[in-house]
Structure formats: C-alpha cells, structure tokens
Length: 149
Image (cartoon, rainbow, N blue to C red; front, side, top):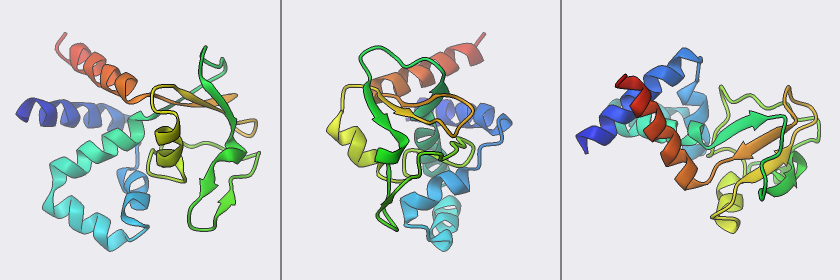
C-alpha cells in the first residue's frame, strides 16, 4: 500500500510540473461541488492525489490514431449536466480535463479492453485517446521506473 501511495505521490509531483489542476480534474467526480473536493482533499489527501492521477492518466493527445482503437468523434462525448454533446470544435485541455468529466466512464465501460480515439479537429492534435486501464498501469510503472534511475 505504501508503495502505491509513494508511486502516486511521485507521479503527481511530475504531473504537477505540467501545471495539472487536480481540483478541476476532480470536480466532476464530486458532482461539481467544490466544498466536497476541499473536504476530500483535507480528509484523505493521498486518496485525492491518487484519484487525480487516475483521472489525468486516462488520456493523451496524438496526431496519429492508434491501430485497433474504437474511433469516435469528440461530438460523441456528452456533458452529463446539460445532456448535450460536446461541439465538434471542442478544444481539449488536459490540464483541467480528466476521466471523470463528461460521459467518459460510460464509454470506457462500453469498450473496456480497447483504446477509444476521439477526433478533435478543434484541438492542437487530431486525436484524444483514452487509454485502457492496463495501459494506465503501465504508464504509472514506467514513471516509477524512471524515478529510480
């Protein structure tokens, strides 16, 4: 357990260098209730960091679609608050967006063992890719390995 917490703390430290906004990433997890985010952060800081890491590590941007990925449009992603799809010109910002936003959890459940690749013509890169859970674990392991060198 300590190893997991240490790994998460190290990874979050590195992600912090990229200006990740954990509060923004975590807010949808708590149904946009800032007081709940603040309380969770105060009561369980290690869990907060771990959930933030999980929320953040779900995605990467690329200009080349991965082979065998489920292909979707960013317009297939729905905002659960408004029930409206994201606009086709939606600009991805991974500093504040994560797995808990929109309907990503439902999409992940529907395609559990495959990457999901969203076309994002309004963003800097052509695609937003949602990793599988296994790939997220591999990314964390690679980071841990790089921190011991």
